[in-house]
Image 1 (cartoon, helix red, strand yellow):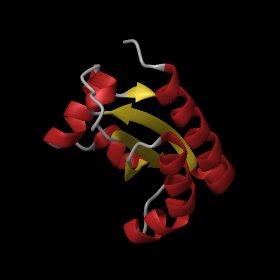
Image 2 (cartoon, one colour; image 1 turned 180 degrees about the horizontal axis):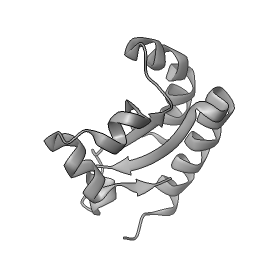
Image 3 (cartoon, helix red, strand yellow; image 1 turned 90 degrees about the horizontal axis):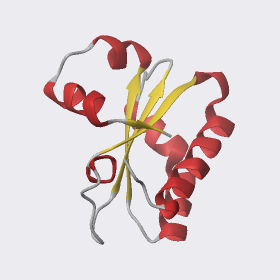
Image 4 (cartoon, one colour; image 1 turned 90 degrees about the vertical axis):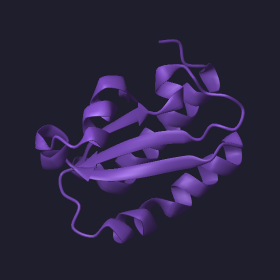
Length: 108
């Protein structure tokens, strides 16, 4: 899978920022969607799955990362869409969404 340099840079900065915010709680960062499949166009957003040790309150995770995600979106001129998931759900849950994401996920 060839990912362009710009997207790779955004993912690298996002992962570093998330690592700074979450420390040991961060268990994984994965690109999925059109960029992971190599089907992205100019209008495509960057879909990212963020795996944490636990997700007790989804909206709290959004709030916790909103400044980082907004800054990276502005810097890259790309919308970044994040999905937050507990490590347990990432490993065990078998929803169609997660099955598809696991198939195409590219670790950041």
